[in-house]
Length: 177
Image 1: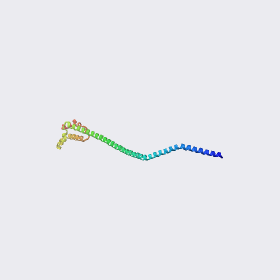
Image 2: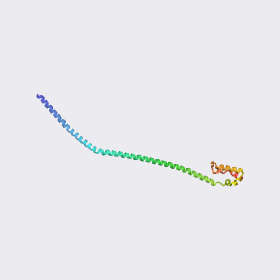
Image 3: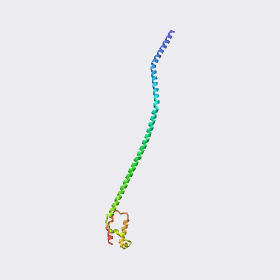
Image 4: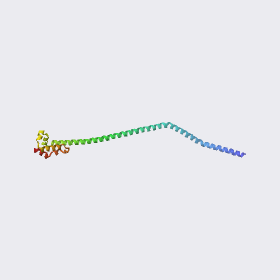
């Protein structure tokens, strides 16, 4: 019997030695785990102190970016309105310039017609327009007919040029009187 006791004692001694070796090897590892736990605790503490202000700053930055985006959108709309107003002003100025050109051209045509009217030679063909009623009845029927044709031609809208009034026919029938 002594022999099993010996083996039992030896087994217990080996188990105790193994446990001692495991504990000796595990102590530095457990110290590292403790150190990692303290480091994690410090990290989480720092994170809990620093994260809320950082998140607030990010939220404020996003709000400012939104405000700036709105301001830029309003600026673009305003610039678009200004561009439209400038375009309308250019179109209006162009239209006014065209109107001025037409008005100036009409003015020069009017001055040209007036100049031709004032510079043409004075003839006696209009003296029949100024005859009194008694004097008109003295005219021959042929002259009265020519004066009537002259007046109807003058009232038409086919007057092209001041020179078209200068014709030898009207002077002939007035001179024959």
